[in-house]
Length: 218
Image 1 (cartoon, one colour):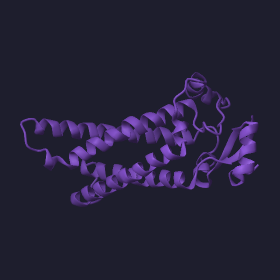
Image 2 (cartoon, rainbow, N blue to C red):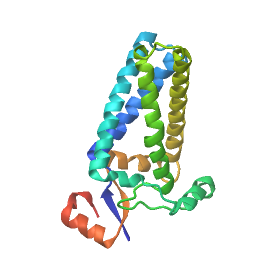
Image 3 (tube, helix red, strand yellow):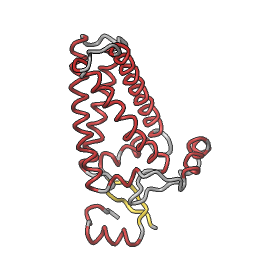
Image 4 (cartoon, helix red, strand yellow):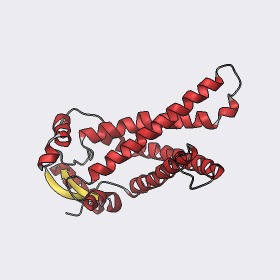
């Protein structure tokens, strides 16, 4: 294995990431306003902002799911225990002692085991929970008849709010980890340029140089 600068984040992936960031912050801002945590916009405007941003995010996620499945990029999120203990130990202890990160990105495994597991849970559990609870709340008028609807709506609201707080916690942890190890700019730069340092096998290096020369810089 040898280290090379390779385009690991495609143009669509970067567009998806930053658009998702914008929409999620819009949803958190408008959702906080709907709950009365701030009064920077009137209630009706915040509700419509929340609904429009939510629909846009669902459309974006739908395209992202299709892209992951058709391009094979879903492989990056496959959970593995290989190196998991070392990475967990690094974040729990080694990072505060100035130790080197035990994981180096590979061509088909650009996320370390802890990242892969976290992102997989986020995409398969937390995001769908937000989708379903949000759509259930939005479509309340279609199922509002019945003896249990009042309590049901309350639980839908609680689940949706709890999932939103979980997303907020994930963002805080995500941003914090960007400040560790390398500089914040170095961590964010690959999601802007697409290029990052990756371990390549001889076969992967030969393939990229021959078939996708634009993806490898050195």
